[in-house]
Image (spheres, rainbow, N blue to C red):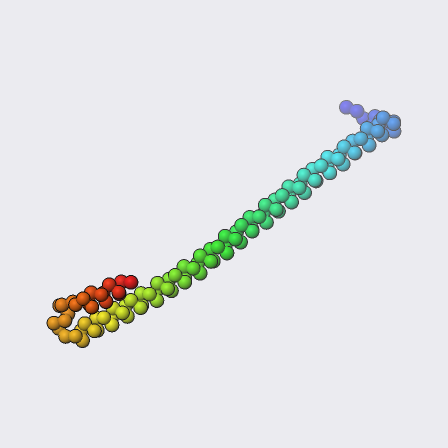
Length: 119
């Protein structure tokens, strides 16, 4: 194994200095390369994360629009059901007001009104 004196002699020689400088330069280039790779990877990851966030925001907006539409449709269906229930109740009241015999016999007008209730 070389001793410390051997390394000192090598460091004082022109070849030793050139080798040391080359070694330091090589280490600096290696550090710069791996630093650049790490920075590029971080930028790429950040860009991918921004793209994912944008897609999630668009998905959220679409889900909110769908929920609003579903609520509107549910309100419209409830209003339609209430209207139909009221029309049926009115029809039942009119049949009851016509007397007991009218409940068993339906006229053409009664059949027409029944068809209109379904519309």
